[in-house]
Amino acid sequence: MLPKQQAYENLADSLIEKFNLRGIEGYYCGTKEEALLMAERFLTPGCSVSWGGSETLEEIGLIDVLKASDYVVYDRKTAKDAEEARELFGKIVTVDYFFMSSNAITLDGELVNIDGTGNRVACLIHGPANVIIVAGMNKMVPDVKSGVARVRNMAAPPNAVRLGMNTPCNSLGRCGNCLSEDCMCDQIVITRKSKVQNRIKVILVGEELGY
Ligand code: SF4
Image 1 (tube, helix red, strand yellow):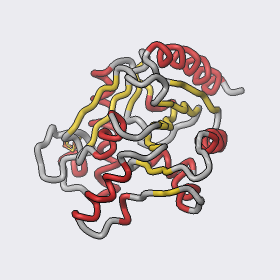
Image 2 (spheres, protein in one colour):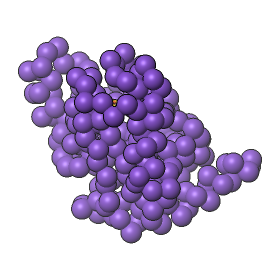
Image 3 (tube, helix red, strand yellow):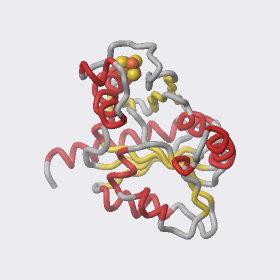
Image 4 (tube, helix red, strand yellow):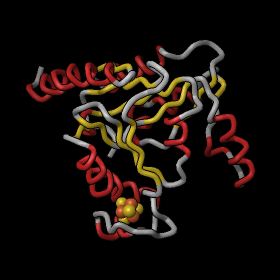
C-alpha cells in the first residue's frame, strides 16, 4: 500500500470514531469501485432513492447505476418546470435513501455543506429515512472555518465553471463573497450530529473525488 493510501486509512479510522460520537455511521473504502459496491449494499428491493448534485457520485458511477436500476428513482433533473420541480421535491424529501457528498468534513467529524437552492442540505437535515454520503479523503479539513474556506475557494470555482454560473468565483478562480443571482452559497450548513442515530452514513474513499 502506498504511504498516502495508508495515511488515508489511518485518518479514516479516527474519523469513524468521531462520527460514532455524533450518531453518524462511518465506513472506509480504499477505492471508488469498492465505494460503489458499498453504497449499493444499503439499498433494499423496491426502495425509493434520490440524490443531490455531486461530482463524486458521478465519478464513482452511482448515478448511472441508480438510473438503470429497478428502484423507485426520483431524479430532480427530470422536472420540466418550477411547479413540477416542487412536486418532485415533495417525493425526494421522503425517500428511503438519499445520496450526496459533503463539501468538507472536519477532523472532528463535522460535515460542512454549502448550497444554493438548499434542496440538498434540506434532505441532509430532515426528511429522507437514510442519507448516504460518499466523500473522497481530499474533502478532509482541520476545522469548520477551513472547511468553509475550502468550499468557497477550491470547490466553488470549478463548480461555477462547470455550471456556467455568473459569479466572481467563476471568473476569478476564488470566492468574491458575492450576493449575486447565481450565488451557490446561499446556505452554509454545519452538521454537528445526527439526531436520529445512524440516519446519516458516511462512506469515506481513499481517493481524490469531486471538487
Ligand atoms: S459566495 Fe459567490 S463568489 Fe463566493 S464561492 Fe459562493 S458563489 Fe462563488
